[in-house]
Amino acid sequence: MRLYRYTTFAIGLSLLIAGRYYYQAPDWDVPISIIMASFAFLTAGWSMDALFLRQWQKLPLVLLATWWTVDGCYWLYWSIVDPAALVMRSANFGASLMPIPNVRLGMVKGNF
Image 1 (tube, rainbow, N blue to C red):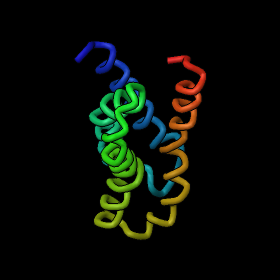
Image 2: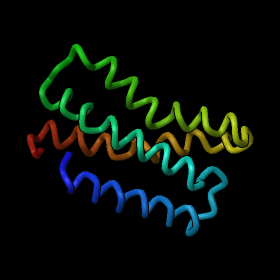
Image 3: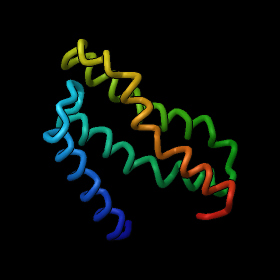
């Protein structure tokens, strides 16, 4: 692993934690920020490699990892901690998945 990956992870996680205190969203707290950011850190590199290298046999696992990172761990966490917070699930899904179209656009244009 390269230092820049840890640095960008630390910066991104710091922004997520700061956002928890800046925005008063009922479903944004520190533990779920750490959980979701950690899963993104662990799966994003492998998933993007599989897509960029067109390893289509890995696509089902990429989609599963994406779902788990964006929605699965969020649903499980809030189902246990406070099921009432799941009212924000659809908004969180869109916000968490938002960078994906930008990555796909870069793949189509060849800007990666």
